[in-house]
Length: 149
Image (cartoon, rainbow, N blue to C red):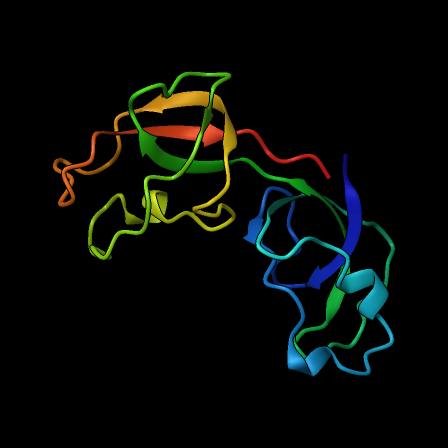
């Protein structure tokens, strides 16, 4: 289900994905707070539509202002332990990884997913981008189903 929110005009394109970071100190006193701060912090979203014929509103966070868009929760790609990783099953992230230069790091610690949560696997994508896991984990790249609003 989509939701209407405000986003920086430079980001307002259908298909753009972002992880909502929550309120900025610059948001204090803004008259548009109710329309802008209406998403769930830490969740990944995808812009589905940019509202036509809406005005650009001034914003203390976004230098070019904000405009109305429709968003929906987006799926998150992640590496999970291979054992039991199949479409429809539930999985958790394997845990933090200190190897930030690894090509799989963004999937081992994906934006929009938490280590202590379980997620339903929508699709098994396949092998992770790395050749060898420095933590000797047996991992599979999957896509989690977007959470319900």
